[in-house]
Image 1 (tube, rainbow, N blue to C red):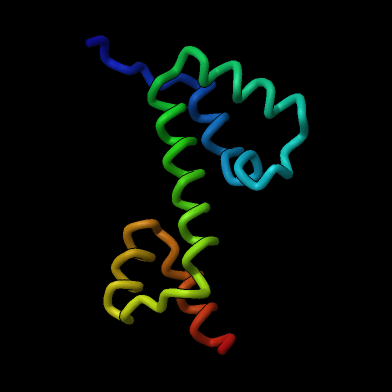
Image 2: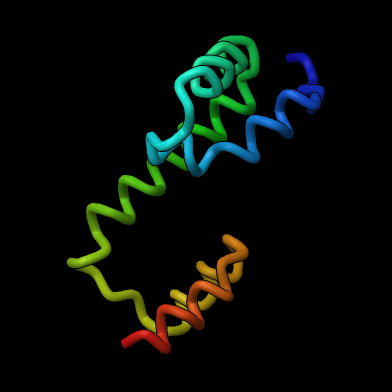
Length: 91
């Protein structure tokens, strides 16, 4: 098994992932990301994992309320603590 070498292309692609997953990224950049993922297994795994996470969140967000401690740990792990604070104050 070969070791993955993180390239500048990987870094650039990771910066655009949110917009890519949301479908709001320019078509040319989407094509570049898709071309990169053809040869980069690690980036393909990151994209697929993020896509699944978003799908699960959208599907379950209205039906499931996470206990406070679980939600805090999840948001901390995903480095979204600032969002957690904003979400709690908007209720």
